[in-house]
Amino acid sequence: MPRPANFSERLSARAYQPRASQPENASHPDMPYPRQSFHRPQTSIGGGSAGHWIKMAGILSPLIIGEIVKDADKRWRWIRISAVATALVSEGFYAHHVKQRREEQQQERCR
Image (cartoon, rainbow, N blue to C red):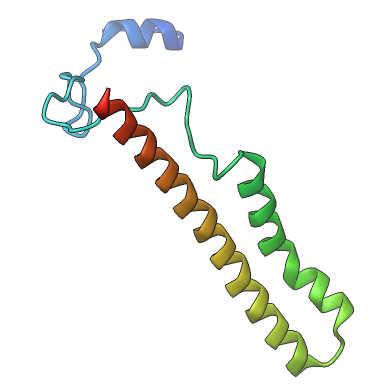
């Protein structure tokens, strides 16, 4: 049997078989919450840009501290403090976001 010349001919020659990790039944009635579609993700923390700036501060803080603080012991101390501080701020924003979402869901249930 001659081999197809291009990709579209090869693709049409064989049928797509979904894997076990990709079941054909896309609806999941046993899930307690609606599925979130990929084309509109909701991954922001707080107002949207706040999460981005917190992450950027955590990433850039070792570089900035390394330029400002010349003593090695003090430098590592401030880098550790900045890592803990950005983690705490990020968790605080996330907790606030979760609290708001739960309050909105509670209000919708009471209607």
